[in-house]
Length: 218
Image (tube, rainbow, N blue to C red; front, side):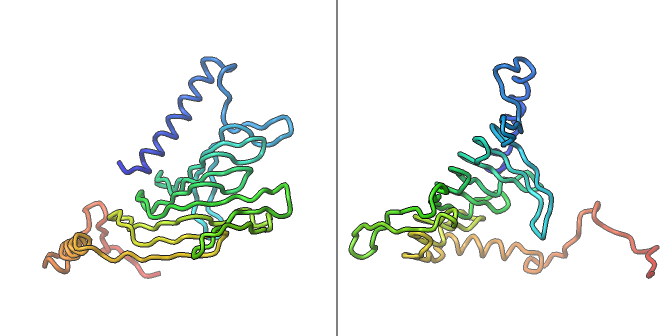
């Protein structure tokens, strides 16, 4: 079981336990997908989004505080794998974020959410050369900015392949990490195991074989 499958299972367990507790004692457990007195989303929500404008369908799970997303939110694809774990504050991305590809981690980074109550927010930035700190004013309409270190990994091996550091969405540092001897051996073994390199002919599973005997061209 991949880590994202495990996370999905935990989320489902939380939901099932919540539903069970609700049945046993409705006064001690708030049900899912509820609205507050003003009609705003509040508490735990489990939302399924259909495919739209080229974006695949997905499910997300997290907490609302009177209409605003707060804390960790989990996004899952149609196969039940977690594709993203993002943190929110005041309905905007804020804090650590993790992204996955087919159940494997490929990116981690940090967002700095902007205060929507004001037209501008201020963020402390550090000069990468002198180390001097200063304040930068940012339009709050941007919602959030990348601020801090972002790391990218090979989703198959877990190897760190790139680091990028941002200050208020501006890239100030970048480093690429080359293949190690162990990584090179791993890829060589995968390539050598491919059917056209082993001299074997690929045969699809019996359940996927098709007969074209009665095929008609309409």
